Length: 54
Image 1: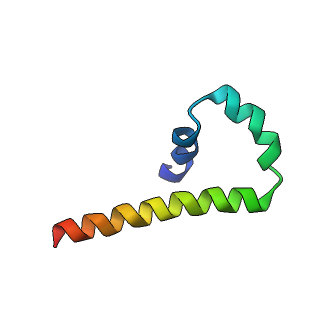
Image 2: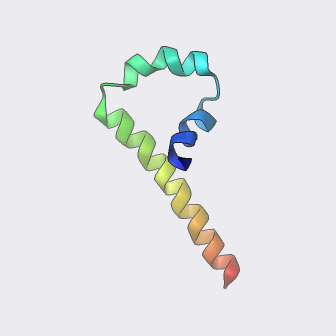
């Protein structure tokens, strides 16, 4: 669920998301790139949490 929420946080306007969906829905490269950004964000947070826990 967190990764799906990443799209909403990236573009909070439902109207804009609906308008742009046609541009990226059939483009695997765009979907992969968006997923990579979200995954890197989770990886960064996990590494930071590990750092602070020591």
